[in-house]
Image (cartoon, rainbow over all chains, first blue to last red; front, side, top):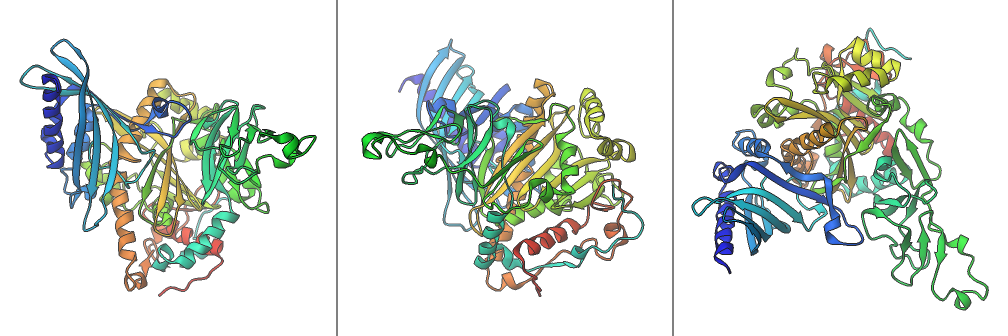
Length: 165
Length: 441
C-alpha cells in the first residue's frame, strides 16, 4: 500500500469511528465547505453496471447545509429514529488511490459495508457499496470534499437510513 | 357541483371509532386483502417514466410481475412478465429501453408490442410451416387505463372503469395534475425500500393523520427545515386547514397559498391559469388553500410538502408513493418525485433535494415515520396486545372537527385536519372492500 493510500485509509477508518461512535459534530468537521455527497438510486438494467445509477434520483444528494442539518436533527430530543440509537458498524476495505491532483487532492476508492442493529433484534440490516471519495488537504488535515456511494441494493432493506454512508 | 354546508350530513364512517388491530397482523385479513388488490385498481407507473418507444418499467400487483412498456408504435401496454412457453420471466431488469424481450430459457423473442416474433427451431420442430405465433403473444393485463398520466391496471377484467372508481377523487387529483398545462413528470427512478410493517399503517398516515406531524416531526421543525413552525399546530394555526373525504380517497389542505408553500411567482401564475376553474376558485379565491397529504385507497399516497434547501430557500415538492404489501407484516414502498413539467431545471433539482432531505429512504421526517410504523407493528404481534382495540375518536363530539364546512369541492369536508375523520373513512372503505362488518371491542 502506498503511503498515500495508507493516509487515505487512516482518514476513512477514523471517519468511520466518528460515525459509529455517534460523534456527528466531529464528522461534519471532516467535510469541506463545498462538500458534494451523493448516493444515487440504483435500478437493475441490462448492460453496464455504471448505467444502473440514476442521474436525477438520489438516496442522498447533499451539501454542507443539508448534511449539517441532518446531523443537528439527530441531537434533538425528538429524533425518534435514533433514540434509542441504532448501532452502526461501517466496515471500510479495499482502499486504493485512483489518482491524485498534486499533493493537495486525492481520489480514493473503497468498499463499504454498513451493518445496522437496532433494539433487541438479533438480525441486522446490511448495506454494501463502493465509495469514490475526493480527499483534500495537506499532511495534517485531510478533509472529505466529494463522496459518491454506489450501493449494491436497488431496494433498500432498511426502513429508513438515519446514518451516513 | 355538490356543496356541503350547514350542519353535518350523516356520514356512516363517523361511527367507525375503533380498529381491531388484528387487521394488521391476521392472516385471514391478509387473504381478504389479496382479493381486494386482485380485483381492484393498482397504480403501475407514471406515463413520463416511459416517454419513448421501447421504454419499459417492471411493476407489481401483489406478486405478479408486470412489464409496462411503450411499444414501437407509441402505445403503452402492460404484459405479464411470463414467457408463453415455460413461464420464464422475459424481463429481468427494473427499467430500460429495448427492441425486444428475450426469454433466456429457449430464446423466444417478443417485440415491444408483446408479439412473439421468433423462436429457435420453429420449423420444423414446432410446426412444418411455422407456429401460429399470434397465439403466443405475451399475455396482456386484463385491464389497463391511463388517467391524468397515471397508469393503473387490474387483474380483474370485470373491474369498474377507472374514472368510475376514482369518482369524486378525480377532482382532487386534478389539483396536482392540471396545475401545469404540460402536466407532471417524474424526476428519475423511484426509490424502493422495505418497511417491516403492515401496508395500511403507512397508508393511514397519509389518508388521515395530520395530528402526528407536530410531535413525530418535532426535530425537523426545531432545526428549521420545515416550512411550518410549532405555532402552526395550535388550534387556530393555519396548518389547521380542511380535511376532505371524497370518492375512494382523502386530501388535506393547509390555509396557505402556493407562494407561502414556496412556489416561485411564475409557477403560481401558471397554477392560476392552468387549474380548472372550480379548483382555481377553491384554492386561490375561497382560500387560500394548498394541498398537503392525500391518499387514494387502497395504497397510493400523495404528499405536497416542502423543505429548506438552504437558510433562505423554501422549496416545495410533490411525492407519489405506493405501499406494496409483500405480506401482512412487510411492505415495499415505491416513491417517486413528481414535478411540474414546465418548471425550471433549477426548481426540479432543488425540489428533488427537498424531498430527499425530508422524505424517502433517508428523509429526516420519514426516518421518524418509519420508527412509528415498525414499532406499532412489533407491538401488534403480541397475542393479547392485538386484542387491545385502537381508537379513532379525534374529532368525534367536537363540533369543529366533524362538522362540514362551506367547501366548493366535492365530497365531505371537515373544518380541520386535526381529526381522525380520514382514518375512519379509510376503515369504512376497507370494510366495504373486504365485505366485512367488524365489530371490534
